[in-house]
Image 1: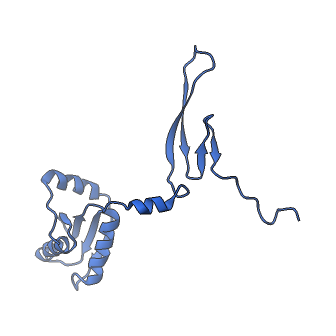
Image 2: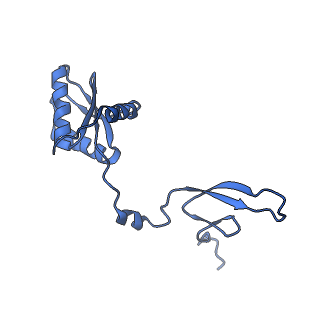
Image 3: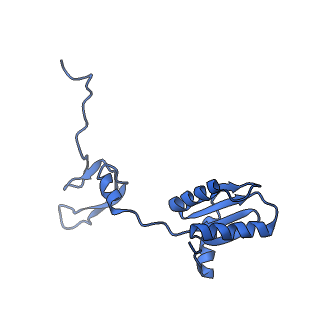
Length: 159
């Protein structure tokens, strides 16, 4: 897989985004093993932007490692500073089927604005921002309710 080429502006943005990251893999004195390549590939698939620490003292060898990782994984070499190598690869598009399989119960929280108009026309409408969780729903009156009623305990049911 050929390495991705980045423009200087894109490279600068990726360097800035990678500043706070911690290394996800470490290349030891043995060099690039298949396990290291698999780990970096998995991290790129999950995060898109990763740092790798190389424990080799030779600068040319570290530059060669960065180029080889970028070539083998189809990633863009972003930065080589000291013993840290930064790689970027665009995240794969999320599968529509995986999102549909999650359903409503696994939905992340969403922010909803509720507008309630005053009963007299002389006042402003009140605007509230509510955080709706995956197990909640918004009623027509603008109140939060559980999507399904809470289940009673089996132990507390009358005999």
